[in-house]
Amino acid sequence: MKIITKLEEQIQALKLSISNPDKRFQFTHWSKHGQKKFATKDDELNFEGGVKLCQEAGGQIATPASMEENKALTKLIKSDGMAYLGLNDKKKEGTFEDASGNPVKITNWAPGEPSNDQDDEDCSAITSDGTWSDVLCTGSYTIICQFMEY
Ligand SMILES: [Ca+2]
Ligand SMILES: [Ca+2]
Image 1: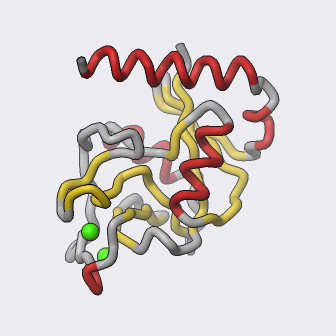
Image 2: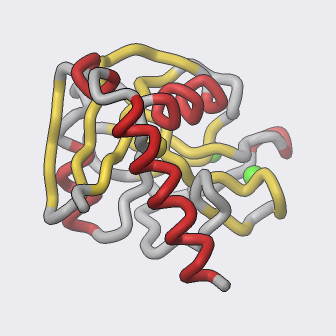
């Protein structure tokens, strides 16, 4: 079942990237690890806006699956910047999953995080040192998308 969901996701992403071949050209900064490419055009949006932006470009909002990917992703973040990750615990408090509902493979929380401040932090963001914090989903942070090479 899980494999089928994964395949469906990949087919969907492929369809989108084929139907919108130019959408990837909007991104100005790229960083790569293995088959995964991270891309940004440095615009700041809220979480839902970021999910939509990445989906429309045939990708997903960035969720590092290894520390190496986390490092590749971190290269795209300005020294004083923060970028949304796909990771969120909107469905169940304290249980973080990616934007498609898949379980998280690694975490790299900063000390004291996730803090769920004001009972309201259900999204996550990464800083230029590569550590993560849970943050409000309604904030405004850099959006980084991820794309798989097939
Ligand atoms: Ca939370
Ligand atoms: Ca927090």
